[in-house]
Image (cartoon, rainbow, N blue to C red; front, top):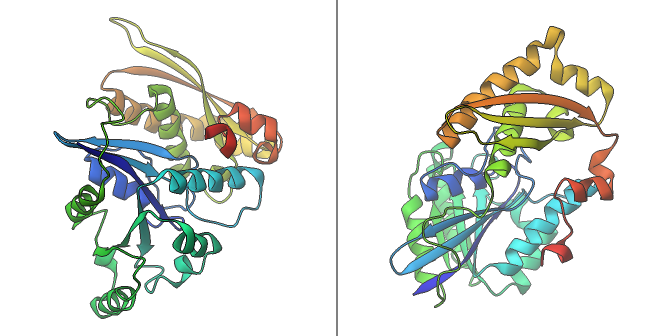
Length: 302
């Protein structure tokens, strides 16, 4: 029996969550075309007869500018520290030579000090040049710290099975860590809040998605009736509250409709969704509020 942890790391919008969803064959991590969508580490579990891979999807690597981003980088640190295998994900569309990724101080330290197996994943090959791809493969093949280089397209599912097989080969001998019938350790409440946050990223522009947090205030499961979900959308300023609600409530109505449909698809049952907007000044830089929102410090997670 083999089992172990595989951390997926990369720059914002490199396709980490898309890769996780593709490997698992179902959506458990939200994805948008905006960077910094993932804020916490998302655990996804793949179980076979004689193996179990525990994937750790992480926030994009960045230089923190406020406390929330510090917490996000702590989740990356924690994931890498726990990992038996690290997937180094390069965005071949926006970082075709991998220079932006490998020039990050975090990545430099990881390459020097971390003893985990390292797979270099060249993502978005469908949007890349074949000659450039051959060059990058040739260049990084010389790096003895990298165990294998795998070109893929996570969005198309191309070569994703090669990634899975390469992870399987490098798993340590362990009993399974989780029951075989679960794909994540998160609750339905968590996934519902993430779905609403995903729709905020899709529907609102500029700073609004990054200033927003979603909390589930109430989640009532009812036999023979729709589940009732009450969610609070937290913003940093009164002006942002007005944007979320929109003229005559049009914007929040649209958000509610899109969120409800996605939640019903995820839960496979009908729901009644109620959305409220609350202002919490500068919550992204408030230690106590971040803790109450579930962004615990690295040492509290370890």
